[in-house]
Length: 314
Image (cartoon, rainbow, N blue to C red):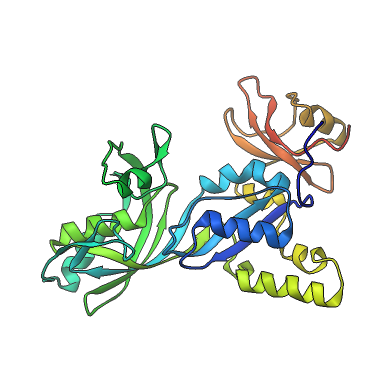
């Protein structure tokens, strides 16, 4: 007998303002309970210290969360010079204290070196896995394991403020970029050490910051619905962004309604006006441009589905 899933079917994306002090998974579970959702997942962990935009995907949107994991991110960070910690942020223990002899010109020259594509070695306090375990689990046991460097791109980094040994910056970076590693590397480059004291994610992909909501706001809506004796979904669901916003940056291929069933059943189709071979595309149907999934243009010029919405057409 099939096990019945707890909760209600909810599809879409909520832009949550993750509070400091909570892990991304704890935040996810709180949001999932408020929405009483059957299925939910977040799109890239933020450290407990960090706040800011954490897109949470519900239901069908979880199929496309990888595209948000792979998207560019924007951050505002404050770093303290003169102290290096074992976690590269203020949640860790200070392991080295050095005098700060840095002027603004030197700081700007060092910051400029991070722009562009470079190699970064992830922190031992990251959630990356080694032999099935997260790196931070090894780190907490005092074990250091090998980590491979990986290519990251810093599209922009702007110095906003430098005073009282504090450096405030805004960064626009590629997927997989660890801001606290940049801060730690900057501190070593300056010869005084540094660690993150404040980190806020201000952007994921092209999602609008004005649609961000807090846990407190969601809980208030749930309480309001209960007090008024109405379904919480009436107040909560209007906050959801459509599922296809997770892939809004992909080029669109619109197909005729007669082809939709083939695509939803996993079959490649011949579509008009397709981009070049290998391009990932967002697939829509008919004049209403209903989103049904993501596909790729194969070597024969066919539109081959990769991830599709649940087939409600039979």
